[in-house]
Length: 191
Image (cartoon, rainbow, N blue to C red; front, side, top):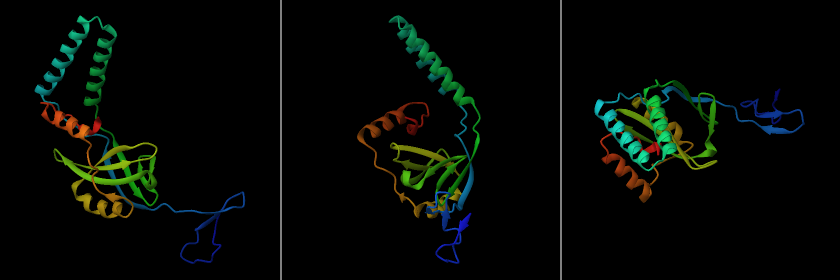
């Protein structure tokens, strides 16, 4: 299946002869780092946070009902139920692999060409790895990791990506400032 056409002893699988007779260069995937990460931070809601959330939803629902917006009220109540359902579910364990091709989360690949930069942040005792993806659209996603893995991951990812937190726009700064002033804990990266 793999053939050594250039007689390089170190890389016998460098070229692949496909059925069409074309010689293609194949990069062999090698696992550089791997860890198990929960899909989300498991958070215990405090009674005051639940009460605040419910009061806001009830007040909005009453206001919408006064304006005869029954459909919007239904959407609001369903949104509250979905939020509570998501908040009470247990996180699943994801296998995250950093390879020579890209980052593999469970069975989904994110290739190095899709990324521009990475950075780490710590919030409430949890360390997050943020990756900025620019293809097919600008998107930031995060992975949870252990604090002792940050140095080795920074070294490995630094070979492929820029280690720099992107600058926030004025709108993002104002949204994050507003969120931080609320009495409940909302993650600004979810917005």
